[in-house]
Length: 302
Length: 284
Image 1 (cartoon, rainbow over the protein chains, first blue to last red):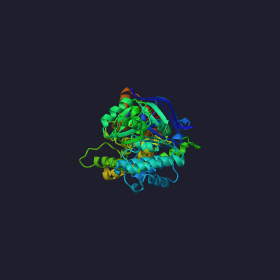
Image 2: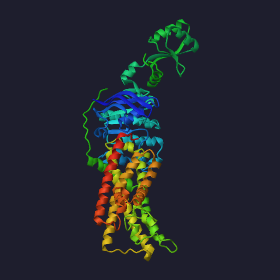
Image 3: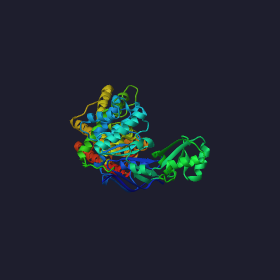
Image 4: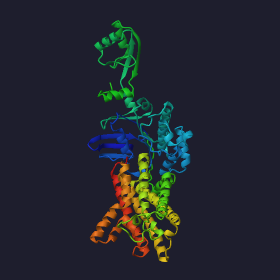
């Protein structure tokens, strides 16, 4: 049974179509990286999953049940946009109110545990309105973690977080999926961070899912390339272009050869053309590069 | 990765859901300065009206008894003077504003996001808010009563507290009737604020408008000129609130019963309407 199964989901806001036939499958226990440009429909999809907005058509099932079933939603942890906290209440009081909403037994212990997880136990008495952006985000995550949710939906959770905050979130996500079997849907624009934890990916564009894959599928489909530097880069590039079709210069000043050829062959070819290579390595494109390529309409995979 | 685990989902009962939501709402009510400010306003207004209206040089507002600041002598649907209007029904105006601010903060803070992604049902929200806000208005009725008594004492002999046995019973019934009406008014304000949740300014203005009873007062004027019995207006919240007075023309307990029936009927209507609208529209 999948944690989330969405079929042919549409959502219109007046004349504007935010989602147009979106399909999405999130297996149980996955950390699902939900990626897309601003306005692509990520937040709309997440809000529908959380029951905050209604779809225009299509079906949304959570653990095999309709998304409106409150018994399923009672086991969800959510951080959509900003945390829903009362600004004049302390962090502690806001957490306790949510614990009461969730009918958590031994609420104090659970709140302390959640605040400790996000390293916010020292700021529990702070008024929420006096917290920094990063602290507010941590409170939101702590709130979402209350009651060990079966399904965690996090919309841009690492926005405003420092490096330590990002590391904590990574640890939390791995911990909650490994130890509690929870499922996590996390959207983020910080793809380098997402790449470190996600087990599955869904890429959305214009309200449609254009690609869903596991991390290993992404890994195998990501292009490998040879990157090299020489003493005469313009000449090297023009020589390479005579033989290979997919040549690019990256931001670090390397020339990348995406054609599936052994590195040795490139070295020999350039040597025969009188070019001395200073440096050569093989690598794979990152999730970010894969995503950008996909958004540009490229195949992304070699 | 295909990791699965045994999942058991339990639907919390209505009682459990409403208990937790009421707990949060009452906690919020008792921890917001807004509640105490409105309790104070409800006490100060009648004290000022009664105290200053009988001061030397001021014009009287036509009260025959100090208790008229609590309930009018007769069901005065048509207003001819401030004395006809200024009684405990004003609590429903203060209440309208308070409810708008109270519910508005749920939406402005994003708290509803946290709420509706849990087990909370829209119906629970309507019921919980109605009960909490009705309680706050009932409390305002009490502070209003205290303020009225203090104002009457300041007024001294110019307005008397004197009532005979039957009138005392009618006064108590009128106060109970108005407190019962708090439930219907709270349901109305909750409904207004839920449907206009994205327009805080309009919802507060509309709550104030309904609280003043201008609509019913206007209809009463028309009824009066057409010689239609005003008693028909008792089917509405403001009408019944007016009917809870010192001499309604019926046995006082019957007036309380009318208040109860009307208040409960409108509460059910507004909760059902509010739940339906909330369920069919986007929360946030």
